[in-house]
Length: 237
Image 1 (cartoon, one colour):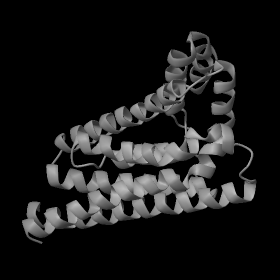
Image 2 (image 1 turned 180 degrees about the horizontal axis):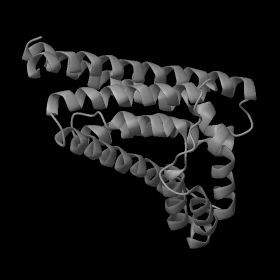
Image 3 (image 1 turned 180 degrees about the vertical axis):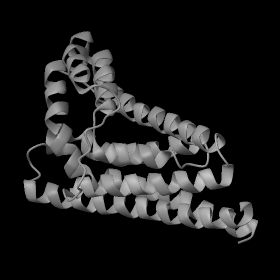
Image 4 (image 1 turned 90 degrees about the horizontal axis):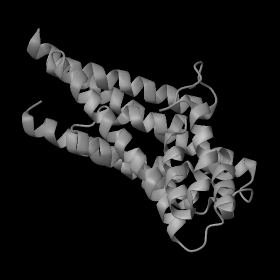
C-alpha cells in the first residue's frame, strides 16, 4: 500500500467516522430521551426558563463538554501512540478502541456480556451538582446543568469518546464528538416536548439502530487498525 492509497483510506475513514457519529446521535434520540428526557424536563421546569437563552446555554454547554472530551481523548491517543513504536502502537490502539466500541454497542443492544458502569465523573457528585445548579439563575443554571449532563455516564457517549482516541489529531477528535453532539441536539432540544410521547417500542427501535451504527463504527476502526498493524509489522519486523 503506497502513501497515496493510505492517505485516501484515512480520509475516507475520517469522513465515515464523522457521518457515523452524527447518525449515532440522531438515531440515539430514543436512548437520550429515555435516559435524560426526564432530567432535562425537570431542569427547565425548576429553572422556569423564559425565552431561548437558557435552552441555548444548556445545549451549548453540553456539546462543549463533548468537544472537550473528544479533544482530551484524542490527546490521550496521541500520547499512547508516541510512547511506543509509532506504527505498531497506532494499529494496536485502533484495534483495542474498535473492540471496546463494539462492546459498548452491544451494551446498548442489551446483549453484551460486560455492562458499562463507567462515566467521566462520579455519578453521585454529578447528581448533587445538577440539583443545586438550578439555584444559579436561568441562564447560568442552565449552562451548569448542560455541562453536567454532558458528563453523565452513557454507553453511547463513552463509545464516541473511545472512538475519538483513534482520531489522527486532537482537533479531529474534538470534531468527532461535535458531530455526535450535533446529532443529539434535535432530541435533547425538544426533550421537554417529546418526553413521554415516544412510546417504549419506538424508543427501543431507535436505540437499536443507534447501537448498530456504534458497532459498525467500532468494526470499521478495528478492521482499519488490523490492516495498519499488519502493514507496519512487515515494515518493522
